[in-house]
Length: 160
Image (cartoon, rainbow, N blue to C red; front, side, top):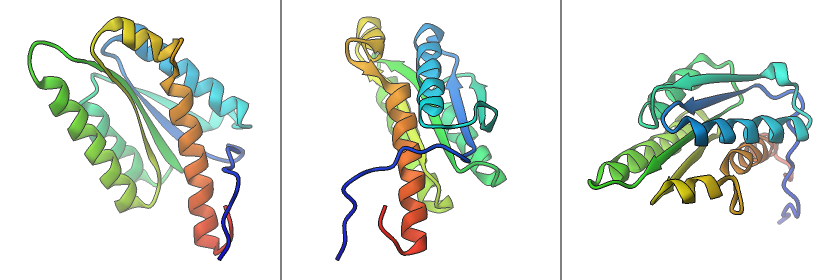
């Protein structure tokens, strides 16, 4: 049995769709910039990164399905921000999107990253979109690039 000791984050040659919720644009703009910078830092060609605006976080799942079904993309990164409010809407949205992205990845054999900040307030969102808690856009892009490379290695019968 062999095991990879490193995860490759090489975006060269990859075409990735980035879906960005326009709800809480202050946060999602920062997530988008993080994803773009992570793609470029991993050697990705900016022309191979296609960014699409989405009305809100809930729509990310359906539009990710559309992107996957085209066969044009190696992966999809979904970026959004859902803040807990007075009702349970946040749990419904977060669960629906996370579950559907996992199902899409399984059905299509291509990664879909859940880059949705789920938090209690705007201060927590800011901290996770470039503040002292990092940038979920960067993390999501790095994860999806690595997952594409690992999937390719598995298909080829080699180590990641």
